[in-house]
Amino acid sequence: MRAFQFVEWQRPGQLRDVPVPEPGPGEVLVKVGGAGACHSDLHLLELPAGSRSFALPFTLGHENAGWVERLGPGATGFAAGDAVIVYGPWGCGLCMNCRQGMENYCQTPGRPSPGGLGGTDGGMAEYLLVPSTRYLIPLGDLDPRGAAPLSDAGLTSYHAVKRSVHLLGPGSTAVVIGAGGLGQMAIQVLKALCGATTVVAVDLSADKLVIAKDMGADETLVSGDAAVAAVRAITKGQGAEVVLDLVGVTPTLTMAAQMARVLGHLTIVGVGGAALPVNFSSPPHECAVASPFWGSIPELIEVIALATAGKITTLVEHFTLDEAAHAYHLLHDGQIQGRAVISPHG
Ligand SMILES: [Zn+2]
Ligand SMILES: [Zn+2]
Figure (cartoon, rainbow, N blue to C red):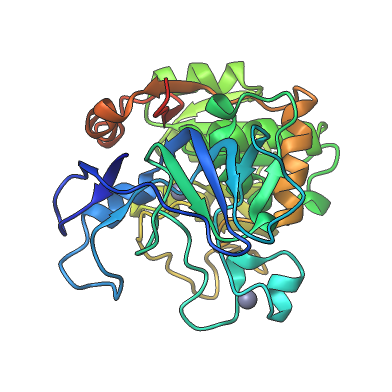
């Protein structure tokens, strides 16, 4: 089969021929419907040689959905043809965090080892080997080609919002910095879970702000000092209860610290890698800063429920495996309006 792989450090991914994996005991082979292209893949591909311990090559794609193709010996609960979404962070399954469904925070050294993010093969191929049925969530009537982004862009945004829901009652304000794939999800999740909060979207791109408005943002602001002043005005000088930075570079973190309020939440989701200066007066007093990573299995079940109810939708641009390299170019250049999804079977 063909697979789009991370072959060499600091080089674009490459399409290669590899054997179709055979599911071993407890494993499942999934026919890939969609594999999302994520900004974190671009960060991975740009790493200097040897900066991570995993071996190359491996197949990219950590945001996957498809149909069960074949169950390995002893794997039960699913049948060939079932539409499924794949939970991405693969932990040990035995530690306290894993047993609570938070395999994203597996306590076993070296875990989680998600397919497509660090040495283990991901879903940008015709077939994906999934280590356990516990990573499969039934999609029901949702189309795997369109649903794939729910497993990362959807779940990551959902988890980031959910920890702050208690702050977002009537009269509150939530700011979403970065209105790309993750931001569009975060806006919809905020409207679904915290319907009375004012959602403010901030981005450099006027096009993305138009989409943000369509996704339910109450206010849209172009990034910069004027956006900070506007948030202070919207919140009557207090700042926002919750600021989600889905970018994580110095200008966005600086804005985030200036937009948050005393006792608020500043949540860094973007993998931009810049540092947020923290001192006695900034961010505001008792504003909690967190950097969540992905989400839990129960939360993915909730995300699928929201999507099934039509409360969140993904804006997807489809590409074939042959077009995967091109899709990453567009993503790198900021030309993907929602999420780029590779659909190996059309
Ligand atoms: Zn990702
Ligand atoms: Zn674990």
